[in-house]
Length: 596
Image (cartoon, rainbow, N blue to C red):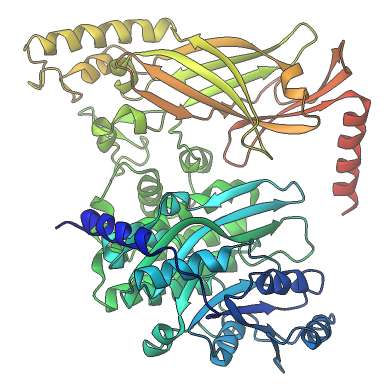
């Protein structure tokens, strides 16, 4: 029986057992330091979980702002609340969590940070799942709530789409992507029997190592789709959380060290597949996130970051690079290893975007092999030839020009080593998605993609070569209708694989202004001849008259303030402020930024 069938069978058993009434079995450990503004909200959210919570252990890490006094006063009226005051600040989250874990008397334990909350029903859902499946660990969906906007983004939603039971973590290696400790319920005896604790002292990303230690012990894990944790993201706070404070290179040093230790923990426990998956996660998640932000840092940071990254990636072996070699994170890692100094940062930023964009130029070696660039020919892009078009890092340029007679959006799709011409792009669907509420969408038209002069010949040659292949006539390389050098893609490449396709439309500013002041992200869906499609974002072109704020006359609002801009990953976005009130709101926001 394969791993997935075992998971399905156990899921059915879990569903049948998911009716028991939870007992008072759970302890919630709340940690905080100088967070008087939020800590009592966190504790109350734990107490409000109801009868399933036997105790809440609040550990104050030697705060100086009166947090401990607030907790003591709350405990006077709540017998389930126990307050522990540490005499010296630990400098991190691991030590206070260990302190709280040592004080727990309940069969199960959860962890909660002082600036977050547990949503109603979280403990009941996790406890029922753990007991129903006889699992040592139960996990549920965490949402990142951006404040003050209230925008919510689910964390690792692919893991928590359905009820499931995983007998052994190696059967679902994607578990390594969820490195949070707070959206899970743990059997206390399981943690103590295996000596699983958090790294002590000032150790940022301590939950990465803790999670690896949990997975290394091979627990039975129950997964539920319920929202069980609300992670508050306050980017405007004077003191940012550890995960948000990425301005110094020491943060990256700490993250790479945590990931290195996680790998060693898993490998040392014989969990080779999980260890490989952890390294792949670093490339796909951690590396791409920081590369997108490199353009915001100074030269000294970039040099130090580059050196640290090269040292970390030098520990990877051939098998780490061989798996999914066309994945964006692996291509970025190979470029970093190939160059002793920071290079091609704008292009790497585009590739680190989600979805990834491989921006021109598209270089080749003398024998026609696709490579990163003429200066870095050792980084081969050959694996892109076998990647399905729905997963290719397609590059689209976007040029937006607001004006009184209409705001026009011009799009240009780039060829990619003949693969685009081979697939036959036909249309592009335009959509604007509200930044703070992803459910608010303004759909645009479906536009016909027209080959530009250079790509028209490429498309025709690719189609011709493709028909020859279908008839059984092999190309020059003998591959007959394949995407290799002698097939359709090869034909397109020999006739000018640098072609482009274009489309143009008018942006409905009134529709974008309807919700009030807001930011909109451009999303595109490219459809191909065979029915395949690829969702992409667009690279924001810069230049004369582009990315400038403009006041556009409006019969309905009087005036619309329109600001096209480029995101950290280089994509086009648009801010719209309708009417005088909207304009004043933008002015006030800019003044606050200048004053702070």
